[in-house]
Amino acid sequence: MKKALLSVRDLRVEFSTRRGTLVAVDGVSFDIMPGEVLGVVGESGAGKSLTGSAIIGLIEPPGRIGAGEIRLTGERIDHLPPERMRRIRGRRIGMVFQDPLTSLNPLYRIGDQLVETIVTHTNKSRAAARTHALALLTEVGIPAPEARIDNYPHQFSGGMRQRVVLALALAANPELIIADEPTTALDVSVQAQIIALLKRLCRDHGTAVMLITHDMGVIAETADRVAVMYAGRIVEIGAVRDVVRSPLHPYTIGLMGSIPKPDVDTPRLTQIPGMMPRLTAIPTGCAFHPRCPRAFAPCAIERPDQKTHGRAEVACWLFQPTRAAAEARG
Image 1: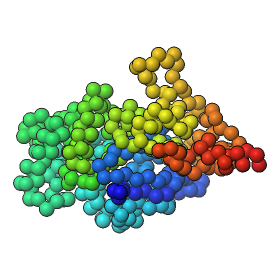
Image 2: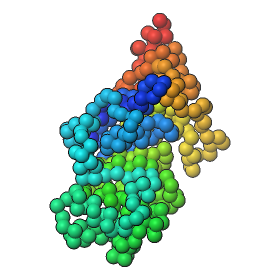
Image 3: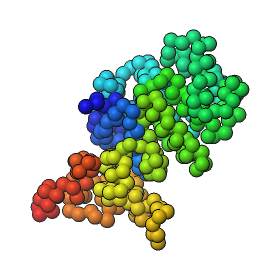
Image 4: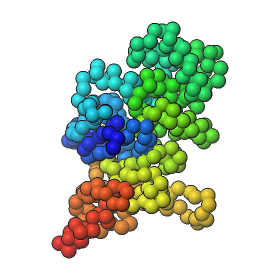
């Protein structure tokens, strides 16, 4: 049995406000194996990006990790001092964000930024780092890298900037890449290129990926497993093929039903009524129950735990029949 590269257990991210403590990520647990792509999907506000930010130690005050553990190859990293965490970011965990300009300094040439990253996280000289930077630009598909390495970020298109960010993320050959909506701002054709590139780089480097997105199409094309998040919790996690073909949780069923299928003549797509609850108004019990077409007695009272069902795990009273029946009778 392989050991998990990344292990997250009972992660809780909270924000202190005048109205009290708001819980944005509540009891999230999952593993990512070496070389695996785990997709994390859900609506805006589900807690996907905050989970990624917690893993790389970028939760800004008044936010904080309130409970739980994050381990990278067995080493706990959620309570490290900022300087130690900074060394892990870039060297062992690479990052790709939605907007490439978040990661690229507009005042510096991309070659300088790549060289600086390589020198910071490896023992290479600047000359060797520049050679490595050129190789990375070639690998991510930047045409004429010898000419483009001294360009500034604004001289690249959005898709090319995202390729440069991928090169930055890979600069120190990290064990894990956290990609937060890496294709959202790109044209569909460019999205497909970036997805194909990400898959190839993972295969060639053996790098694991946590792919955060709201797009199930991207997940289905890229990921090995998928975790579906709703209101700060994972409601279902399993192999992509199983979750796409046979979703269990009513929320996942709604997400799958909202995706057009070119080979099926569907007169109307599924619509999930209502909206994701605000942090100040998370419902009791299962947070999805006010929008759920299959809600029954226990759903509004007590929150279901994540339980194994077949090859997936699901947090839903529909798959805990003994307890649910007892609650319904009581």
